Structure formats: C-alpha cells, structure tokens
Image (cartoon, rainbow, N blue to C red):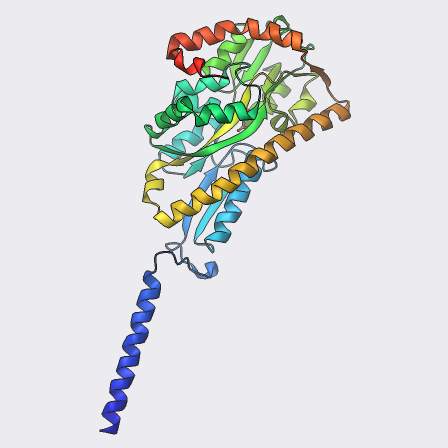
Amino acid sequence: MYLSVYYKRFTFVLILAVLFLLLTACQKNAFPIDNEQLSEEERLVIRFSHVVGENTPKGLAARKFAELINERSNGHVEVQVFPNGFLYKDGEEMDALLNGDIQMIAPATSKVTSLVPEWSVIDLPFAFSTYEEVHDYIAGPIGQRLISKLDDKGLHTLGIWDNGFKQISNREFPILLPTDLKQLNMRIMPSDILEKQFSILGAVPKKIDFNILFHHLENGDVDGQENTLSNITSKNLHTLQKYLTISNHGYLGYVLLMNDEFWKELPVDIQLLIKETLIEVNQWEWDIAHQINSEKLVELENCECIGIHHLTEQERLIWEEAFEPVFEYYKDRFGAEYIELLP
Ligand code: LMR
C-alpha cells in the first residue's frame, strides 16, 4: 500500500518533469545557450561574401553585423564573412547569391545594374552632392521602385551602406577639366552609365573587377580609375598613380542583399533579430564610412605621394555641363521620372 502511493507520486513527478522539458524545448524564442554544443543542423549559417578589404566601411560593417548576430543569438545564427573576393569575385557573387550558394552580399549599386539597369541612375555624374541626398532619394518613391525591381529578381534588400564619393586618379596628367581625360584608359565598374560618363569625354572606359585592378594599373592596361579614397588606399592604388582629382563626381554605396528564398524560410524571430541589428549596424556603417574617407583624404594630403587637385566650383560647373548628354541617355532609356526626382 505504502509502496504503491510512493510509485504514483514518483510517476506524477516524472510526467511533470517530462512536460516541463518538452515545453522548454518548444519555446519559439529560445536560442540554445551554449554554441559549443550546437550541431551543424542546429546552427544557422549565413555566408556573407564581399570583394573589399576588412578595414573598409563595408568590411568593418560586415564584421560588426556578424559579431552582433552571433552574440545576440547565442551562436545559433552564425554569420560567416568572406572578404576580398576570397570566395566569389565581382562578376560571380550575384549569381552565387541567386543560386543560394551564399546568403548575403553587398555589391556596389553600380554592380546591380547588370540585373536591374535602372539602378544606374545612382551613377549619374554629379547627381548627388551629399550622402543625405542619396539616402532620401532611395527612401523615396523612386528608390522604393528600384528596390522592388530587385525583389522581382529573387532578392531581399536589407539596407543601403555608404562608401563615399568617387575621385579620379591617373598616372599621366593632372585632371582639371573634362577634356583632360581624352584618350586615357579608365577602369570602371560594370555600369553602362559609367561607361557613357567616360566615353562621352573621349576617354576609353574598361570594365575590370576590383580585385584585379591593382595588376591592371601596374601593367599599364589602364591609366587611371575612379573610386572612393577608402577603396583607393585600401588596395594601395594611389602608389601606382601620379595624380588625384578630388571631384566627388559620383556616389559609391552598396545594396545589402539576401537571397529572398532563404530570407522567407528564416524563422520570424531570426528575421526580426536581423532587421533590428541592421538598424544599428546600418547607421554605424554610414558614420564609419564618412569618417574613413575624410581620414584618408588627410593621409593622402600629408603623404606627398600623389599630386592632388580639388575641383574648383567653376571647374565643377564645366564638368556638369559636359555630362548633360549622359542624363539624356539615361532618360531616353528609362524615362524622365527617375531623373526628375533627383535632388
Ligand atoms: C569597385 O569595384 O570599385 C567597388 O565596387 C568595390 C567595392 O565593393 O567597394
């Protein structure tokens, strides 16, 4: 009799314990505490590939994003960052993303133009003077239309990261006026508008991957290039160039993209974690991008390793006039509405 009561109590306590364990395991928000013990199946891996160095605005922000996500999910979500085109090069990373071989990239807006050519509005020379103007344009109706065109291609846009405004460098002459570019071979990112921007001035634009640009400049395949000071210095491109024009003629920033199928399959709490973390990281990235590019200008001015010319206001007006046909070219292809809402 005494023994049967004991067994009943024991069974009851056992059932309660099993129920408690089951409930804890099913809790939706519970990230496992100890990532060391997570199996491959329990860990959710996001592979993030990009083509620049780790100490650039994009490289630093990708690493910060990875650290915060890993920490906030207790290692349940692991963001693996592959910099310097180590995994996929410029021309390969978009296909790798669309095929699901990687889950995140942050290509320059100029590079998404091969998928959605309307994005080349951002490449129009002197279209923007400040980062805020770019952010407002992208947050506005045209920017949202551009983003929805990326959605249609199987992508999910998570934000815009800045790099900076592009400057012109070359090994031949100081560039003060548009005519100075005549016959120079200039490296560009793959964008028809960038091609037009140089060809209209009599220069010879050449589309070359970022990771092999140093060698092309070294071999003399190209005389010059346009890029942000962060990109120029992180790859030591200035060491191969004699002249630098601070022209601020074009914006270089990134679209932070995820494979849409992958995004939709993520649990809601992880989507939320990514979105909330990115609100913080995106702002941090903007600040660090502006800071790095300003610091690099001071470094270059002090190094006496390259001749620097700052475009005067008067010179800028001459460049703007020379580029008017590029705007016409864009308008003829994609319609006036993209241009009309430019600042
Ligand atoms: C370039 O190709 O010059 C840039 O897009 C590289 C980058 O990602 O900043």
